[in-house]
Image 1 (tube, rainbow, N blue to C red):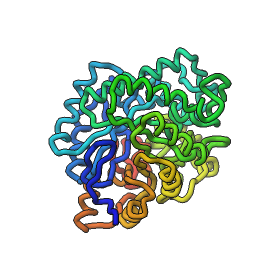
Image 2: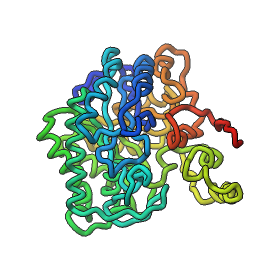
Image 3: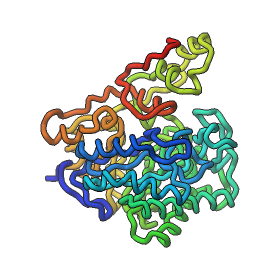
Image 4: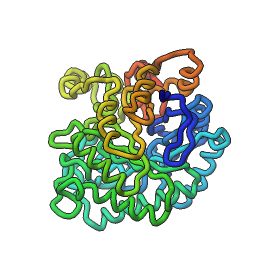
Length: 400
């Protein structure tokens, strides 16, 4: 009988259990995207708290794909030494750290990018309501090289592996999704052509880093009209395995933000307080929108364990490990997922924001579920400050 507390090996990486801290944007980079000391302190707390492995918050591979003004970057060789220092305390504790790499595409922040945002096709994207520029072949090749060089840098910095972010409406998932990719050339059309950009990254990266662990995060569906479906996701996962990939993390969501981090209710007040795009609006407009937003934004259900069954179907088609993330809160549910082999690993985001020591508390029997209330204020707060738990309470200011 398998247990979530079993020691295991993921793509050659030794883990003390089957709990993984899923990638979470920490907003703990400086103006250039270098990691700050408090990020190292966070990873040390997570390590001491018992997680089997840590996947970093997203690291940008190119300045034209930066999703947030304070996003971590790994687009320059001189950053390698910064990440070596970041990893040192965690390595001393024996917890592997996997770097997540991404280009945020149509979700790139205009104030960070400083120019038009890129996408596979011309399309209007939330949350900034900008129209993407359809990428030229030269721009696609530049992104491919950006990923390859960032993979090289992660290895040089001492990360135990790398995860390519191809979910949540970022650039690679935009290429995968028919909702975002209308191209008629070799980079669009059927699944194989939409996957081509990832295949090219994998082929070139393997030539540079050899058997270094390379994983991927995909959406089992994206909740967008004519978008990614589970059958398409299964094809993508197979193609990744055929490309020499080592593991697949199964999430969900595309350009619909609330599909990937589901909530009991739309956090209207937090949006107006924590999102810089909305916080500067006139009070009267805020009042009007506070009534309209809950009607405009569709609440997605269920809010717990919502990627488990898709992950199980993907796992049936693969020989490489499958990681599942999304609404995992109860230890009993996680044990059942592993025991019934619906996934090989469970991945947590919000529960480890409120409780970095949660896994140790699970193992010691002190609690059997996360204290997270799924307000998702934490995911809005990183738009203007470092990652932290708000527990459904808005910060006070002198203007309140």
